[in-house]
Image 1 (cartoon, rainbow, N blue to C red):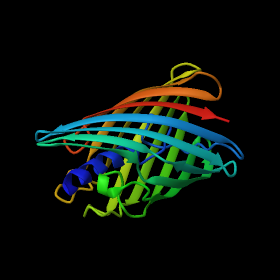
Image 2 (image 1 turned 120 degrees about the vertical axis):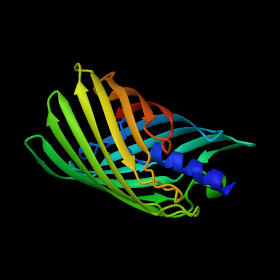
Image 3 (image 1 turned 90 degrees about the horizontal axis):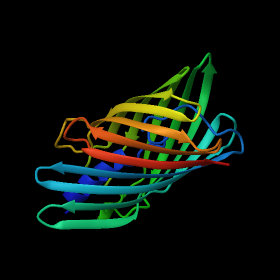
Length: 250
């Protein structure tokens, strides 16, 4: 049973370990501006089939960003998750997962090129006995690069995740990903994303890798909706993930 829970936690880590411009996994260097908020209501549904085991995961992840200054944001995410694992027996669990608190600081910006760092911690608010969390405090740090080439923007992330856990998983996780945004119209962006992270499963040296495509539509100046599809490029990544979200600025 612990192995099943560890597998599900692995899926959920890759579903929800970053708070970029949804549906992208790769973050950008943009911040909200001093005194401004952004509330994101994101959801993701993933399906994975391997060795006769079918895993279905759902996450609803409200994320609140606040501009401490024009170049510094604090970002808090409190995800709710549900999973179902169909093996010789069926296992279902639902509840809050681990809470994340991150700070993004854009420390350089010139001629369309900008850099930011984003350190964060993961607070074990999820029940690890139900497969909804890691059971320990973890931390992470990302270097983020954005290059504006109107109408295309390119984003690149390098990250380190300290995966403290009670499942005997790897603790040192590296992340690399790149994303592109194309402004098709004033209101519509077409986005694409690829990336990989170290496999938390000690029994495998194959790092999960994904490709993603999606759209972001600005309903108004302060409200946008998005949708995306993430495909697993190898067996260690979730096969299919469907992403939907709403972002509200105020």
